[in-house]
Image (cartoon, rainbow, N blue to C red; front, side, top):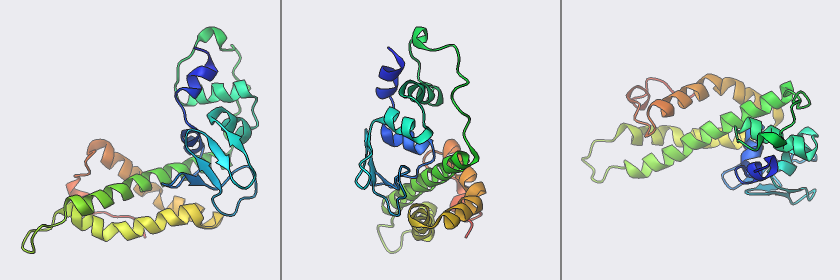
Length: 208
């Protein structure tokens, strides 16, 4: 399997966009990086399509445009960054042509990571709000239900800032939430179901 086949069979345009710092809403919309887009006009799924500038293609096309790389180098970058194996005989021995990410690209990756972690947390909160809702007035409230009531609206606000805020607002939010994003990542790595007693009981919370 050559590098194009390997990448196109394993990476969607949406996954590529999120890997390289493009925040994508839960509806699959994003601000297009290929023109001066003010509002999300790009739809991402298996492929991408911008309804404003008409940019269109698959994951390889997306990375080729984003980094200004020829198609094969874009496919190689995806294969390397997503750890996708492919036929080594078709892999060039010289790799330095793939440029290191710029500070702006590194920030966009951090912004995407922040969005993904908060988005996953938001979905957990919505699930807990339904799953642990008390069935009778005398029932004791579950800590995760309490957490959902306390956090849901604030997390939704943070996600809206990451999607629709100004560049300055987004950078400030990413910086403010950096430690909390790391804590949430550790929390769900250690407790996939979210049952972290210390956090559920309100011993730590999102920076406001």
